[in-house]
Length: 202
Image 1 (tube, rainbow, N blue to C red):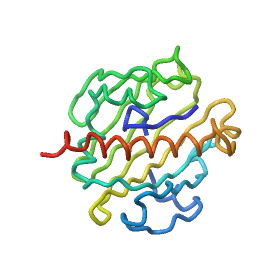
Image 2 (image 1 turned 30 degrees about the vertical axis):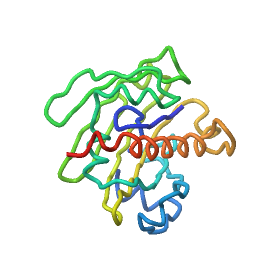
Image 3 (image 1 turned 45 degrees about the vertical axis):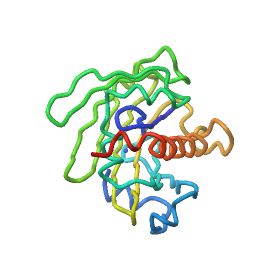
Image 4 (image 1 turned 90 degrees about the vertical axis):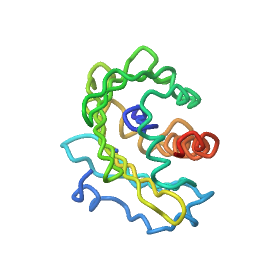
């Protein structure tokens, strides 16, 4: 299954205007209105011949620079508090490219190797699964964009992926489906930054 938690981890958690034109509409909402609300999830048409995609927008009650430090803390064992992550480690960091390895609870025998490219001046993270076949996928990539929203942060994640059973997972409306997983991920990040955000303040 497709998973995104932190950039390159869940990857965690995520890119083009042409892709966004095919999505269901997402209303422009202020940070204050997002607080305490569910994330807004839209299904996207894939950029390739096969697969699926999504766009998720949610709000974090912290300024973008603080949330950015959290999202780019790639050597972070606190992410193990996410119930879908069994293990995580930083493999390498070269320039603005970071490679991490994550093992997820839903596929415990596979090691997901993510490459994340960091664009600090844009608050933008682009990630790609480097070993999709080893993880039972055809491809998986996306981006995460942070923007100021009132006193908080608007987080937009765009993700494209393909694997056996992808249509069922994307459209399954109950526990175990894409919407439930994404809602958990967003809530986990909101709770995480509320509890540990002080560690990322300068």
